[in-house]
Length: 163
Length: 115
Picture 1 (cartoon, each protein chain N blue to C red):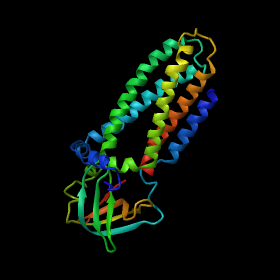
Picture 2 (cartoon, chains in turn yellow, orange):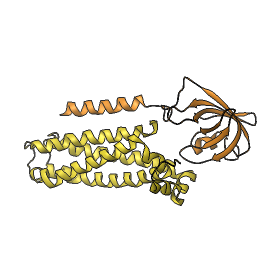
Picture 3 (tube, rainbow over the protein chains, first blue to last red):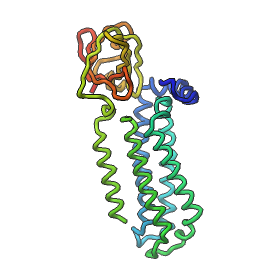
């Protein structure tokens, strides 16, 4: 525990939940493995959508590919939030001050913003396209940003322990 | 576009490989130290067990292994209990003064590997 962290993170770390996660033989490893497994699911679903937005899998209907892959992406993201919260709670005061963790959270916000901009902007231009039709440039931009951002988020997550 | 994705994925893996050996990056392996003395506090918890040890110069925070590994090697909570005398060989943190990561610890004549 570090005293320098904002009080809310110290309180979270010292909560009974934090205590339980640290003391339990299984909870931390399960959250740890669960976080990675849900990341794999998330990255797979995101990659399928991004490849489609970038013009790959051209023979498929964009609507079908994106709508189906998105379900997995949302489920996997929620699982990552839950497992990530457990991992964070165990060491909240240190992680809140960790520069790589802060950068990772900021990038997640940018990634979600990219999704929101796509949903309210480019989505309509994409969803009704026939298989084989060219993707509008803004869909390609969204796809490229997405794959890049989430890969860096994953790299940041792996790097937190080293800073 | 696919080339861009391939390159990005390659970079991500390269970064991952460079960071192999979890948690030892911010410790100075070129300057191993041995801290010996009584255990003052002991936390047997995840992600790593930690003890504080009154060494010759100061009180060191010694980061040990995850609890499951500690247990499987016999270094249980009872073994690293407060009041016992420990000798910890490891590497000082380059980020936090007074903290070290133990490579191995010796308690009651028995040595436990932490890696």
